[in-house]
Amino acid sequence: DGGITQSPKYLFRKEGQNVTLSCEQNLNHDAMYWYRQDPGQGLRLIYYSQIVNDFQKGDIAEGYSVSREKKESFPLTVTSAQKNPTAFYLCASSPPTGSTSTDTQYFGPGTRLTVL
Amino acid sequence: QKEVEQNSGPLSVPEGAIASLNCTYSDRGSQSFFWYRQYSGKSPELIMFIYSNGDKEDGRFTAQLNKASQYVSLLIRDSQPSDSATYLCAVFSSASKIIFGSGTRLSIRP
Image 1 (cartoon, rainbow over the protein chains, first blue to last red):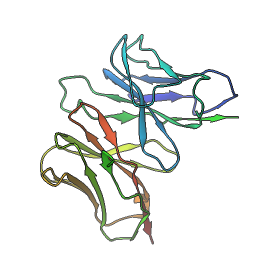
Image 2 (cartoon, chains in turn blue, yellow; image 1 turned 30 degrees about the vertical axis):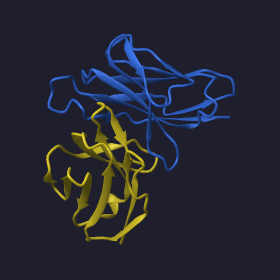
Image 3 (cartoon, rainbow over the protein chains, first blue to last red; image 1 turned 120 degrees about the horizontal axis):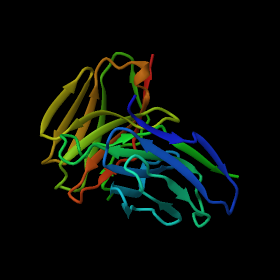
């Protein structure tokens, strides 16, 4: 059963803590993305990765870090430097280069992070 | 000017009518255009994509693209209560990035 999974579904963080959000895909997609969505807002790009061991900052990368050690996995760490981390975090991936829909993004179910 | 603009709504449409959702974009070099549906508390789900000028139909959904006017729309025929959601317009820009609009909230009233 192919798809994108994110865990946990809900996450609570205390002030000053780092937390890591998991994103896994078994779609053989090359590119993976992390977005943040705030209530009533659109999606803002945090980080993205086109290939293994390479990633680029998006529009709001400050206070976040990522790694891409495996094609299937793109975890996001929300560090204590992120001052307002409460949001809905969405992971997405795109089909391989050369496919007919390489610029189409498919989303995982999301992780809702709340700072206590 | 925002790169991708949508009316935030809510847009209220009676059941069975046609819902028309609109989106404008600023990058004239944009090549690909997407519509996502997002139910409250859920992640966006791709419902349509369009690359060429004109109309593209898929079931009750029709996407319309006018590159000269930098305008893309989504029509939903025979609207159902289950169509009530936020619809996100997304544009693949000339900088090879997908830019999302803030979404239009659609409400189908029985």
